[in-house]
Amino acid sequence: MNISTALHYRTLKYLMQHLARVAERGHMTGMTPRNVAIVWAPNLLRCKELEVGGVAALQGVGVQAVVTEFLVCYADLIFCDTLPQVGNLPHPQGNAVC
Image 1: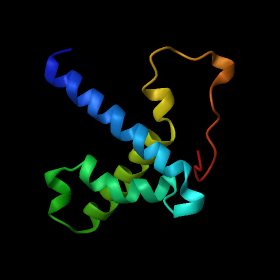
Image 2: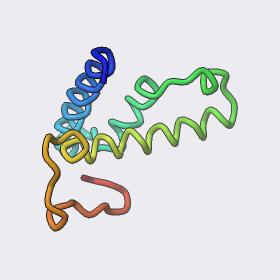
Image 3: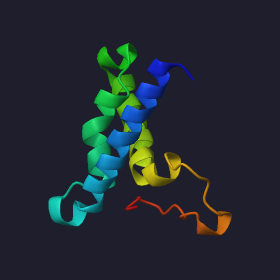
Image 4: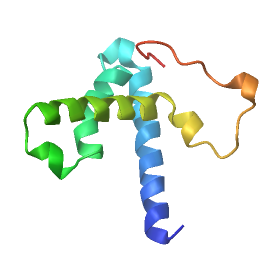
């Protein structure tokens, strides 16, 4: 891993862990994991094809939001330094609340 890649990884890790903490307080702020993802996804996963607009852009934004929501919900697991025991893994739920 080169230095640039390591810096990008650390930045993503820090941001996702922060957004996960924001989402944990969603019951007070309204910023649930899904809402955090809707707000942040277009900035985190930007691509030129989606900037043109149209129906494809709207579908692409939905995919971006799902990926971002997953990163927010599982930030502690994705960015952990050691692998957890299989029995301790969280089980995904429909309409993620984390």
